[in-house]
Length: 244
Ligand code: PGA
Image (cartoon, rainbow, N blue to C red; front, side):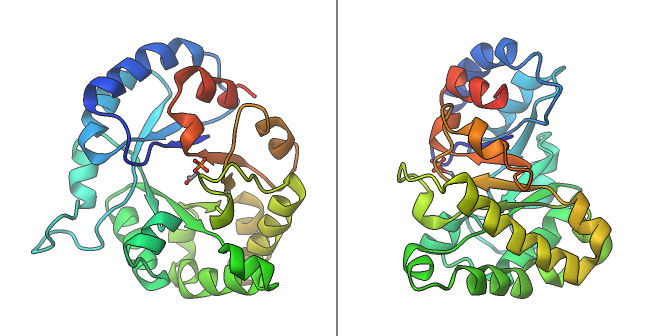
């Protein structure tokens, strides 16, 4: 269960969140928990989760190890503060910051090289779904991005299916729609990396996941977890998602 805080919460807000969230998540051995705060709150988050099973991730990662890349943060910088994960290719990065399948692949490889677990996002836009192109879009994103990973690299990633029309809109994909898309993605994995990889890979659903819809989503065997934006900002709310 992953929380993506997007551009919310200062270090002080982060500390406050975890004071509330830690005890509420203390009995959640059934799942892994990762919270992805903004870069500037990573250190506060790592401090706050010390001694717990909760992990901390970045929301993006540079594709280069270092260099003249103003505004970028490298894998080594992320691991140096104690984070263990990195979201790559979030639809907001694709939509507003020109992220492409090619850069998603490069960033995923950089995360793996740094020893971070990448959470790689794919998902179709509203007009793509409405024109019946969901499957084609997911296949293309997989083929041009993720499929560039070696088998060894692929084994270390988590995939997140995030239909763009469901993100921050309050419109959750029905559990059936989400499961359908997960099946499409898993079929791609099977074709490229084989049955064992397809069985093992974890595919998260993201897009308006809330305490009151998480149970129905998680009841789908295809859905292995969730990537939660808005509802992860509230400690009590996110704890009830984690403890669905
Ligand atoms: P949301 O965001 O839960 O606020 O829809 C999900 C995401 O962007 O990961």
